[in-house]
Each structure stands twice: as structure tokens, then as C-alpha cells.
Amino acid sequence: MYFLGLGIVLLLLKWQEIGPVAEWSWWTVLAPFALAVVWWTWADWSGYTKRKAMERDDQRKQDRINRHLEAIGQKPRDARRR
Image (tube, rainbow, N blue to C red):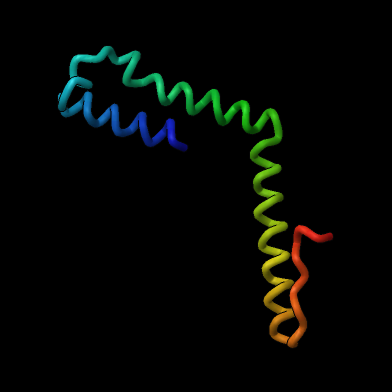
């Protein structure tokens, strides 16, 4: 996501001819978009994206369990002490 943001900023600077970016080649300005594609391809191929999504889901589930335990007056479990 950082590559995409950097690419958009550089693209706008080049298009508006602002600062030293105006003199850079288009290949340099568009390189962050290519890096974003490479990153997303690797993240999907390696399972990184799926693993992070599962970690977020597990954390939400544990937070929900802890809220319910607190609501009924029990001490919530520490997720790290399973």
C-alpha cells in the first residue's frame, strides 16, 4: 500500500511539474506501481495476505469472547496463555 501511495504522489508531482520530480524520467516515477504489483503478487503467492486476515479474525474473535466474559463478571483469558 505504501508503494501505491508513493506512486500516486510521484505521479501527481510529475504531472504538475513540481520540484525535482518534474525532471525525473517516467520510468522512475512509475516504478512504485510496478513494485506494488510485485509486492501484492508475492503476498498472495506466499500466503502472507491470508495469514494476516486470519490473525485479524482470530483477534476479533478473542476480543469478542473477552467482552462477553467481562459482561458476565468473569476474568477474560489472556490470548497468549493458551
